[in-house]
Image (cartoon, rainbow, N blue to C red; front, top):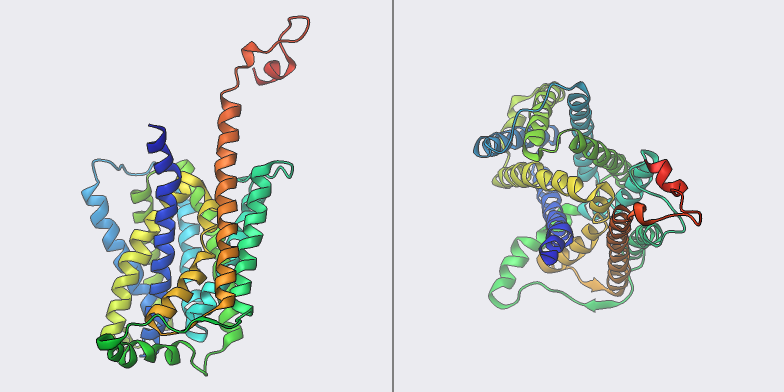
Length: 369
């Protein structure tokens, strides 16, 4: 029984969050490639919201026996509306920044999310900060180590460790003709690197704030599917008129290539739907800092995927940075587990068995009573 609880409480959320990060990197690469072929980021955002609403409408229909309509509470709907307004703004900033920058830059900047989220969680009193506590020390050290490891990957290249991981023999022609054309797309000389990076930083600050809001929403109404459906519906209502206002040319709303269709379907179904559900489920289960701590893994995934699918070499800096980042992530996870154990120990203390020398009720018990 204890092992089943451990699987539910740590292993399953950890595996889910790593899978989400893998999917996110793939989604950024697909959008960057589609945008190079004429895909407008306003159109892309509106399509993804509409597709996400449709997916969650189907999910709400199939799970209607397990979900109920949310109560008519202003705090709930105001938070969902605020979350979607921020989410829509964040997506526009992210996709514009991705057009000007690259997926690698986005993965690098995403390492700011754990720091942003931890600071916001402390500010909103959602995370305990007891500097003498080993769990708090582990979370702080792990967050710093994760960011430092990502910086090592970005700033220190070093000698080659592995020249390439692309397929050979019969598959080499495929990787040369299709996959190896992508680096020129992803690293376009016309990209405005600085503006793209700043837009992505704004995005990740919004995402961190969104984690905090999602955590509050789950406390008010812990129904992931229903909450996400209403959120996507509000997002669609907001995004369609705004995107039409900024992109009134109807010809731009036609998919410019099959790659654009794939990017929209992939992001709309997975990124804006299934993985949005996983995010809110993990936040409900483990809290916003746990979810944010996995963001630094995206740059490791980006490096590995670039080596496999784009034929890029793996350098010593990437290996060292990955080891540091993995150690930092482990520290954060250990800190969360330790914090939960400390909370359980405090909850299981039998204060009735405590007494003072004169047999009177202890002060702590009187205060708690």
